[in-house]
Image (tube, rainbow, N blue to C red; front, side, top):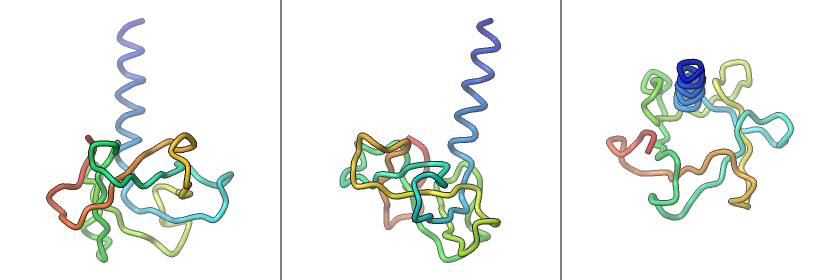
Length: 102
């Protein structure tokens, strides 16, 4: 039972961290993740660096490439103004070296 629970948690964590090609949706019901952008790194679950190049967006890197097409995206995200609604809190950094899961 413990092994099964551990495998489930590892799979969930891996899925949570792997999405790097992201599409912004206008509808909360379409979103895979509801995102709240924090003002402070210490509040974030993930530190995100936004890149202009799809080739830089690698799994587990925290480097996000914004796609124009839903079909290309690993995640569809909706941005909320309320921290309590969020399934993922992110901090957006200017430095690629800071990107990743906390």
